[in-house]
Image 1 (cartoon, rainbow, N blue to C red):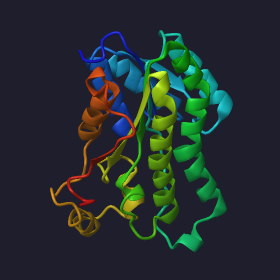
Image 2 (spheres, helix red, strand yellow; image 1 turned 60 degrees about the vertical axis):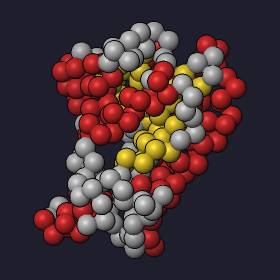
Image 3 (cartoon, rainbow, N blue to C red; image 1 turned 90 degrees about the vertical axis):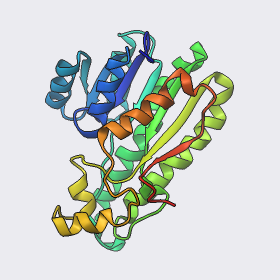
Amino acid sequence: MRLEGKVAIVTGAGSGFGAEIARRFVKEGAKVLVADLNGPAADRVAEEIGATSCEADVSDGMAVQAMIAAGEALGPVDILVNNAGMTHMPAPLEEISEDDFDRVFAVNCKSIYLGAKHLVPLMKSRKAGAIVNVSSTAGISPRPNLNWYNSSKGWVNTATRTMAVELAPHGIRVNAVNPVAGETPLLKSFMGEDSPEMRAKFLSTIPLGRFSTPEDIANACLYLASDEASMVTGVTMLVDGGRCI
């Protein structure tokens, strides 16, 4: 029960990493708001794990403000996990449409700004809080043809570190988790196609020889969000099976 008495918001929690993070947080005693653009998916996960749900477009300021308010209705929000993310299909960088570029940066980057804008003042007033940003090894060791996704995750890692430095005097910790490609709905988009040959190609770059799992990422987020990590801030933790060595 490492999160007993805590209130957490997990974005993009209708599936994949986010759903497992929310599930693990509930098991560890937290009251969790499951937030997702797909409202019915958020409802299903929340009902399954015993949490509260909220439909939210994390790239929209008013939606994020409403999401934070929904979290605060459960009690003072102690933890925000910025897990919502998206990618573009693999292609040469000059072929990615402007709409795809804008959407990737809105969901992967602007969402973190908006969450901070609306939640950090409340955390500052309480002199406590933990923010965990779900980034990617793509922001540390980029793969070709995912250029703008790679760049957005590099932004997440830099934002995590600068947020940590600025917010530390206010008792707020900010860390990131950098997963290698995982068994989530985004995997096919990363690879371009989900075939045995493409999977073998991706796995050949991971020394431990497997994709990350939602459980792997939930474990890392749990540690960083818990009081066990009270001296940890500004970390961009690799959960990558050795890929970035």
